[in-house]
Length: 106
Image: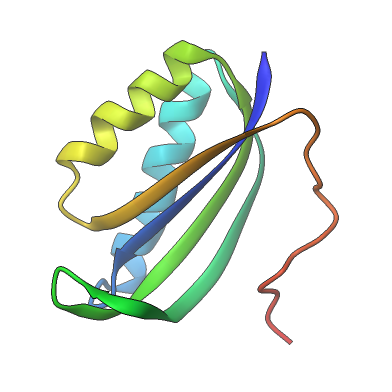
């Protein structure tokens, strides 16, 4: 198994309840498809550098997890059809840094 970071950018007009269900949904997808979530960071509502689908801002949710190709395929399938997600990025790592939080709320 390899280590991954997956960042999801959700629509700016989602309610708190919808954000929590989105986070729980992808947490469950990772755990169900032979993966293991190590850490979830909520970076909050941030400005986008460029408009994406007419949105200027987005909620960022960052997952650090351990998984395999089945886990990645399952995430890709779900993200493509999820209307609340406007962008996502998955990056593979040899070792995860779980101590540093770049967008920690002060």
